[in-house]
Image 1 (tube, rainbow, N blue to C red):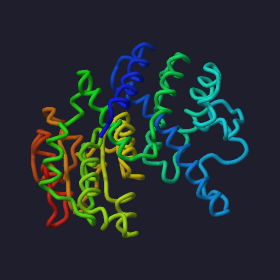
Image 2 (cartoon, rainbow, N blue to C red):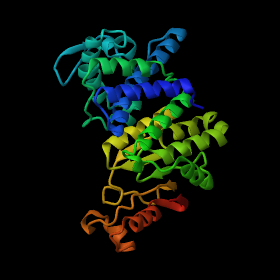
Image 3 (spheres, helix red, strand yellow):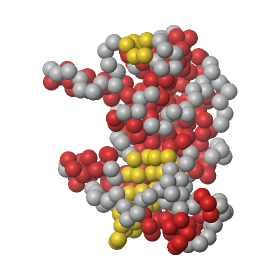
Image 4 (cartoon, rainbow, N blue to C red):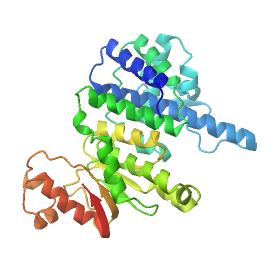
Length: 331
């Protein structure tokens, strides 16, 4: 349960963005995810370093190596240590701003390998929009006070931020009410062996709710079984969307809720870009009912089933195609 103190911190971060001239709620959330990701990378490495020190071994596959990193945007060599949250948060405002906006942001944009790929694979078109060092200092101080290692706290933090985005009246259409999502998940009762998809995932609300349901109802079956845990962390959750900002927000939503590497992908689900057939045990979705599409943009095999331009009918045909025999869907 999110506390009043944490809500106050998030509200203060939100106010800092407004004071700094960033008033679009989805832009605020997007800029916050960049900084969340920087802190998560450093926190994860500090955990690895503590474990390696205890075992008397080297850190395996460190994100921040020893030596220098070459910034592809500037061509300059930057010490890896400077890219770490625990280092740059203590710099003077102007220097911190320079490191984050020029170097650390470029680093996460170009970090697209390994476990970090769920978020960073959508960073190619990202833009750092905080223009004021004083604003950045306030935001960094607020985020630094959050415990990124506490999955429950961070999940609640992200839900609270998403709620502020919806309450602001800006981009609220991306959010299906949480109680409706939860009802649909409970009706479908996800199982540890399921492969789950939302072909119009937005902020990944359905996938997050399914992951929480599984943690509550099948905790031992997942987290005390190596194969099930591997499936849960890397292969269970699939989400598609055509908005890269939503994909970044959705991937961060999954990561803050404890799913390390969800398969979140840029894809037009109704087009030939989506070859999925008989692949999923469970589909949970609130697809867009935005009127009609051009036939040219829709997959031919969907039109064979349902000759229409109505998105709601095309998505139903898509769900039937994507589900395994015996699969189930709540829409």
